[in-house]
Length: 200
Image (tube, rainbow, N blue to C red; front, side):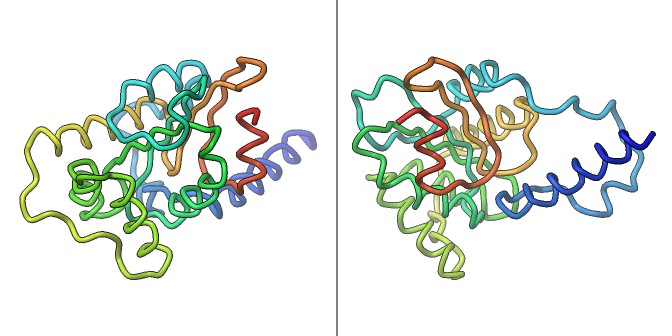
């Protein structure tokens, strides 16, 4: 019994720490409501997460010839996603990342994500959005007109995100550049940790 209490305490502490590095859509009042379906069993194995994420729609930055791609689900209103965007930039000479917008946190998430996808240069639009998020100025202004098929792609990304069992962003999946091992992670990391995780 003592071991179980220790494990519960550890998991609670670990969960609290994770919340500091990721944005999620769970609301306190939702926990009290009875579930309509069995609760999710948690994230899928990293190899499956990588396979699912590879189906998403997004834009690619970094080294085109890099052996592996890091797939990132992000929400345009998430400051932790903005921190990961910033942390990844020093690695882009040898790293390829595909950023896929989802509609998770706020009403403007979906239209802002779609606006980035339809931009002439999505990476420039993303930089504008993430800079504004970090400055607490709300992110990029959503386009007045967004094609239905682009909105549908953001919705499809959101479905893919949920199918990996994740509930917070950023969520990213990768294949280690040296060992070939698959990995996945929810939350922002700094440049050094990102390089270590993906094998640079």
